Length: 272
Length: 296
Image (cartoon, rainbow over all chains, first blue to last red; front, side):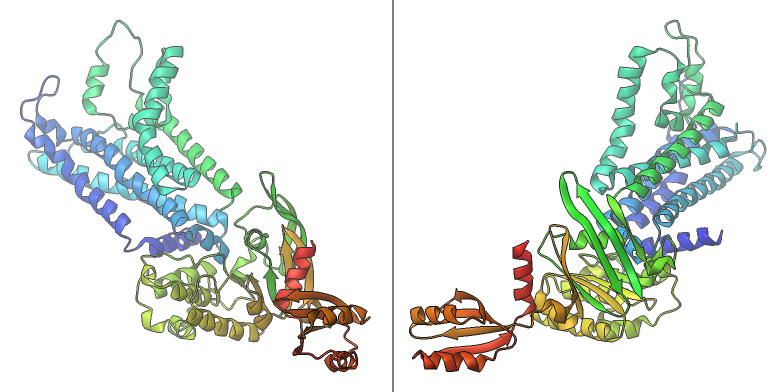
């Protein structure tokens, strides 16, 4: 615990008052509680969504806020993790830290603790916002049904770990900030989708298609209407396009361990 | 006592051998100059012993293994360029170094005064000139009172004033009794500061030892006459003149350490040769270095 705090406080000294971290952090803090309020604009919603109050009341608030967080964690927290790793390569402070006396293991652990802390903090922020929004939209104000949420809190935490540990892997593996950010975005938007649909789906048409790393992470907090759509029986395919939550949690947890393990393996063996 | 022992160290980049079976012992309290042309393997050697590069084969051991697998907290080092967080000021950057070293509270103002940077201690690192960055890096190496200090081309890219300032600081550090390893290709700098040298080329250690031992005891003689042909014949007849080369209208000869410069003057006079130029001096490290590296 002492060592964890020692390494975390070193990271705080390094990135305190850093414009990039401050900007992305602030954007996350502002957009996380506000994005969901766009839902107030949608008054006439198609079935099966009864009304827009579902966005703000328990238990719907967990799903809709979680889906907003799905994007925001991927963008803002993912970028922060990419930055705290790759900027150290750009500034050559990664090599200077090692020369100064930080072991490679401790340098890596410090970054891992950043990933862990950001995920914990983001989860706590999610819980506080969800509880506050849900409380003020219950009539009368109350926490009734607040925790009837299909394990939304651990799901959200694992989702945060999934994105941030993926960013950690990309950061340590690619190292160059521009290319790392480009690859991070490309992987999520194109590469995984192409591998999934143009390779995997051509070979095997079953639920295994859903177990790709970022698909599993995304399915921890899916776009809520998808869960309705997914229940509509289809003639052509006999499997769901969404992973069951417990499968998504286990798959993502395995990927988190893999991402962190490969990132450490790569960092500990390469020249800096 | 041996501070660093390097054994059969090699490093390959693909087919290129950056280091080739290097062996080197660093003794406590000495000031070592690691000399070599650009690309000779100086920075690669320092990179490996500072654990940022992985050796292809061979080993090294700091302080006889006293500090386990991370002895670098006992070493202050700059490699190639001064590397700091550009958006942080001098004090914040030094505090990060102190934190990593696990050193006790340090008077950064005093440290920055030593390198003449105290007046800019609250300015962001990115606003510093190259000389200021280099001086901050030197200050950073002193944090935690390390046993060994390593500098890699410490005056690279500096203007004459910057070079003079950095040299004064380096000389003070060298005189303080710490073990210093300084990689450089500026031989004058090494000759002024270092007690020992190691000469490296194409990844091979060509020579090592005290500066005095590397420098030959022979005397270098510069001699010229209005009749250079006659002088050339005369010099080839003198048995204790070891070698003669012509450079810009004068002959440079190595003469045996047991003979005096005046003897040449007397002998030439006896042969009816008038000398228009006669200077005797010890060889500079630069000349020894060029001879050693050209031979290999």
